[in-house]
Amino acid sequence: MRAQAGALLLGLALVACCGGPAAGQVTAIRAGRLVDPETGTIAANQVILVDNGRFTAVGANVSVPRGARVVDLSNLVVLPGLVDAHNHLALTYKEVPEHNVYYLTYVLDGTPLRAIQAVSNGIQMLNAGFTVVRDMGNAGDYADAALRRAIEQGWVPGPTIINSGIIIGGMGGQFWPTPEMAMQKNIVYPEYLDADTPDEIVKAVRQNALFGARVIKICVDCKPWGYTVDEIRLFINEAARAGLKVEGHVQTVDGARRAIEAGIWSIAHDRGLTDEMHQGMAAKGIFRAGTETPILLTGHTTPERYQRTVAGLRNAYERGVPLTFSTDADYWVPGRTRGEVAIEFIETWKAAGVPPVDILRAMTVNGYRVSETENERGPIRPGLAADLIAVTDNPLERIDALRDVRFVMKDGVVFKQDGVMTPADFFHGGPVRGWNVR
Ligand SMILES: [Zn+2]
Picture (cartoon, rainbow, N blue to C red):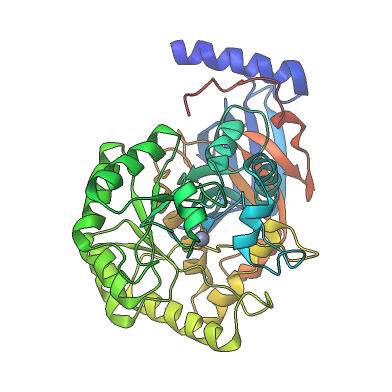
């Protein structure tokens, strides 16, 4: 009952400012067709009821309650929101002035500026249908946690953010820093947390948990020495104490072997992932966040690299590795939003011969699982948070339908309608969804 009273207050707050559904008012969505990525099926003429930000009923025989606000998507194909399992919303490197060298971006752009850009990038992702984004580090001094909280508290619209805090690596992280950078930590740092000993590993995990991480990201092999199997296990165990999983940035076969042996949650990037590694990942259920850059994003891959990426993705699919859709799209492509860059990655999946239904599963079902949201949000199912999108064509037959998202609902609030962002109901002057401690 207390929850219902709180819900009523929330409804009042929403209607007072923005003309959304009235307090206690149910929203009824008429879906011309409704896709279930899990089963790979599509159902006609469904009614979806939303009350207080959650789905309450889904089906063909669900009646629309009297007084309900009706959202007519009878000409569209409705499906669950998409997941980008690896992005960096608080990082945007670009041709001018830094020639796409992110090392320099860290010097040029401070954390507050990057946090504001992260808000913009988040809105661009939501506009493209991504309702969950795993933000995997390189966010300055916890701009990722600030972004997540700002969205959760109802200040700005954006995807649900699963953020890693600062990437943990041996001294230097992904950099080869000068002694001034590394020892005095006043240039570029805190882009990485140094952790070279067991004590430092424990402390770094706890620091990220303290400052709002929802997942831990480590550099497995950014240096030739990298982390041992035992050290990776220490990360996994310490993160588990905080309720967090561990993703490993992996760039060598040897690093992949160690991460798989340690039983890591997910592996980012495909460079170290051979057929043998894929077999190990499939056996252990380790998620692959391969960040498969499409060839059309000129300058961010090469034809040779792209061919290896396509072949690797194909191999992973054939081996039954749990695949997630991941982009690492942390750069600006002039003329495109961050969301448009991210959706472009379906080209690599098509080139790898992955059927549309399994591309869609990577973008939804497996995305929720790797994000650990599947019991809270993702599927269009009574009891879960009301996130959904709509497109004009059936993505089970034509995955490119996802390039034209016409409608987006997040937590039961309409963000985009008829192809146009209508985000007014997302802006609040205070924490309307409750103040939260990081
Ligand atoms: Zn990345």
